[in-house]
Each structure stands twice: as structure tokens, then as C-alpha cells.
Amino acid sequence: MEVEFDATKLAKKCATEKSRAKAFGQERGKRLGRRLSALLAAANLGDLKGAPGRLHALKGNLAGKLSLDLDGPYRLIFEPVVESEDDVDCSNPAEWGKITRVRILSIEDTHE
Image (cartoon, rainbow, N blue to C red):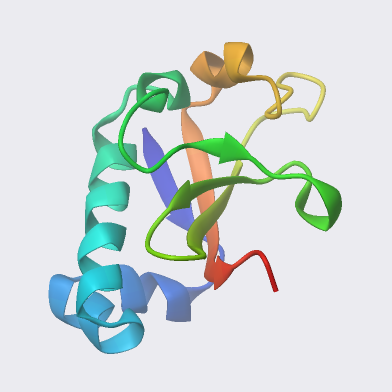
């Protein structure tokens, strides 16, 4: 799957094991590396159903976004990159197989 970043600063923080550990701490940095590797290795988002990290669609003010668990309340937040929003309903796991490109938006506690 293709993975892009919403901001250059975030891309730099996620680029290497060392930069992830510095920006997010040792444990969260390791989990973030595993989640990014899983995204890159997948042919589409449907390949990650049931994989570690509990892929799930978000609700409320983050509707239309997806997340993967990191540690505690922290999540890797991303969105599908599609030609038209009408093409894919990312809240429906049955349609995740259509998503082959994502944009990483943030690493955050979505419960605040």
C-alpha cells in the first residue's frame, strides 16, 4: 500500500527507529514502526483486518478517518486517499479492500 504523510515534520519524526523513539518514546516508537511497516506491506487496507493494532474507523469529529492502536490511548490516525469520497465508505470494513493509499495525519490520544 502507498503511505504518505500530511506534513513533512511528521514524516521526519516517523522516518527511522531513532527519530520515532526521540519524538514518541521508545515503546510507542517501536509500535509505530510496526504499524507503518504493516501498512507498507499490505496490498490494501483490508489485509489489516484482524492484524495487531486493531484497525478501526473513527466517529464524531474524526469521522472519515481510521486509526491503529499504538499504546495506551495513543493511536496512529490516517485517512484513505481516494479519487472520490463516494468511492469508499471507510467506516465500512467490507470496503477497506478498495483502499490502496493512505495519508498519515497524526499520532495522538483520541480520547482527550
